[in-house]
Amino acid sequence: MTETFTIGLVGARGHTGRELLRLIDGHPHLQLVFAASRELAGSPVSDIAPAPAGLLFENGTAANLASRQPDVCILALPNGASTPFIDAFEMVSPQSVLVDLSADHRFGDGWAYGLPELYDEREGLYGAQRVANPGCYATAAQIAVHPSLGMLAGSPSVFGVSGYSGAGTTPSPKNDRERLHENLMPYALTDHIHEREISHHLGQRVCFTPHVHPAFSGILATVHLAFRTPQTTQGLLKTYQEVYEGHDLIKVQSNAPELKDGTDFPGVIIGGFAVSEDGAHGVIVAAEDNLLKGAAVQAIQNINLALKLDLLTGILPGKR
Ligand SMILES: NC(=O)c1ccc[n+]([C@@H]2O[C@H](COP(=O)([O-])OP(=O)(O)OC[C@H]3O[C@@H](n4cnc5c(N)ncnc54)[C@H](OP(=O)(O)O)[C@@H]3O)[C@@H](O)[C@H]2O)c1
Image (cartoon, rainbow, N blue to C red; front, side):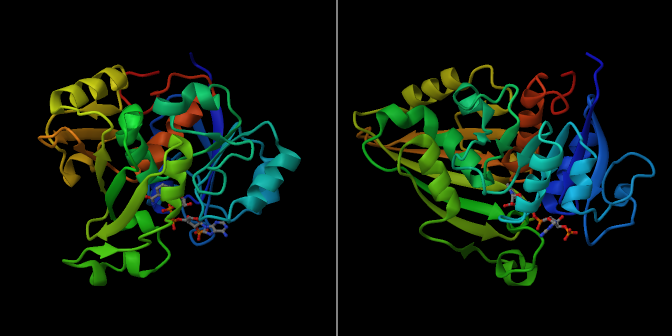
């Protein structure tokens, strides 16, 4: 396969944007044709990430960027900011594949929800044209809970910790490095949008409490499960090994991963599988890089499927 697809990126200055630039540059079938940033307009894209020689950041209007009619456009923008771009693409270039990293389209409204290891067929990701990329915590938590769904006696509870890059680049207490130094900050203890997203897609209420830790990236999600019938550590581990066999980005191991194991890892590591003596309570730990499987790697997986390429092209070496 030698075909090349053109791709544009809006929100290219951001944390996820930089990871996307790196992945696009290494992808054998994607050719970056624009990278939009208002703040960096006019400067070389290669100043912040690998990129085609001579390509400059641009501050194009939504109509101007859509008129370039790329095969794919990624919207890596804050919630609510992508609407003008989507409207412009619908008018000028409806055939372009759009992948939105925000939470705006994760609850239906005609967009496919792009968590390929769990919902590839349900969501019709192969050849999809509008794909909502899942949230970072939502990805780790769903991968950790999904295989247990048939065993549950009640709502799972997820204690999540994320690096401050999860809060984007707009200054806030959640990415204030001075405040976070030697600190751990809880926030949104009920009704976090990822709690709603996890529960919506699993079809099972899940309670979720996020915290920010002082490192740049990395998510650790500790998941508590209550079982209807007694389970064992070995049985639970075997179930997860069977479910995720053949999924190269999901690593199932018996020991609990630490936060650093997930940092820079392209997928999700699931481990722990501790079950109480009475078999009624289990704990699973998931580690993930919020910027990779939690955002940019998953976006590339979704683009690969939309373009009918191999799921892992440009993500794992040797995949074309
Ligand atoms: N960070 C994560 O771990 C993570 C994980 C999963 C999903 N997400 C989601 O991905 C999206 C991007 O996150 P991020 O962390 O990369 O954010 P970020 O670092 O704050 O970057 C946001 C980008 O959007 C641009 N931007 C902001 N407002 C804009 C507007 N009104 N019009 C055009 N461009 C605008 C900014 O560039 P200029 O100001 O230079 O134009 C910047 O490049 C968010 O929806 C976030 O929730 C993030």
